[in-house]
Length: 437
Image 1 (tube, one colour):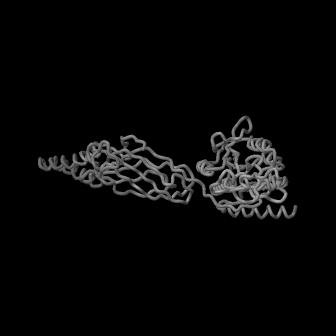
Image 2 (tube, rainbow, N blue to C red):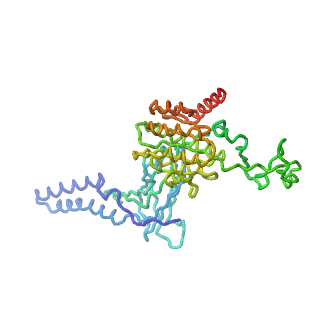
Image 3 (cartoon, rainbow, N blue to C red):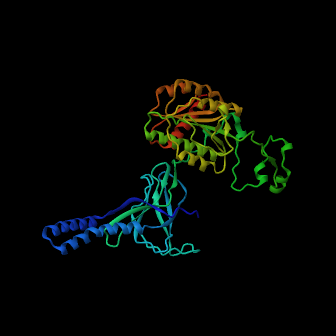
């Protein structure tokens, strides 16, 4: 477990409590009275009461906590609205027992940590002993209220002197980022996640623990050429098996996330992020390699080495099968609207689609766009199958007009909408368009 700095920095410098201020005020009155009355005994009382709060402040300054603090989250990544356990381990590094105190974790309101609680006295530091009397493990349940990467920590330890005359707070350890991802809604399969241009060859095999033979062999179907018979698998399964036809390449899908700083309400942008997250995770579950193009400056990273070269040699953030859903959600946790313009987003998408060599699923989640950009997006329609645009309620009407005229399937959404509802509307419009065509 990594060690943190043992020193503590004051959050609130030592100061008198209400009782300390009261004693100090009585002492000042006694000093004035001693001068007026000429009483040395009253002078002694005044000096004592005035100095006592100052001595208490010195004591809480000198006897400050010296703790090593580490923390962990279980689970380490959660979705907005879910709960997690924050485990904070504190160890006394002083050769003396720690004084009685209270503790709380420093965190933004989005994390929802608990209020102040008693901090038990710890024994003197023990060499070569782990989790001895000098160590305490503090646990608390927190609810992640908002998406983002939120700092939790440092640990705030507050204490008073034994007489309750002085008070101080100290910050111990370093903060740790608590990653809260956008909510992910399960989406049903259907016509939106299978490109018609690939037909039945786009079939994906799903096995929990597949063997090598099961991955490349399937049961014989009428019309399969005999040259593809897999004799080893046939002998194993006691029925005619053929080699599964390899996919021509990993099935691809593209997402466009509108991350420009527009006038859309915050709730609408959050719904946009949830749509991107839900669609991205759904496509990854279906076996697609997902590339994400941002209309603002690139904030997503993707899997190292998996980026597809776009315009000017830039690598498009790409997410492969496996644990890519976790990486995608972690990237989306910190995404924010940007006011820096970018004019090559659609060109990056077009370059990627041309390299695919066939029409692939493309999903755009938009809340704005210039006429030039919309025209460029409309122009790539022939390389998309399907081409679905989820359009925010605050977007100008021209966004839907331009894309719908080019053949994009346009689906409106508003801030707070459930991604599953928007997906179902898209499925309904897709089926209606297929039936008409």
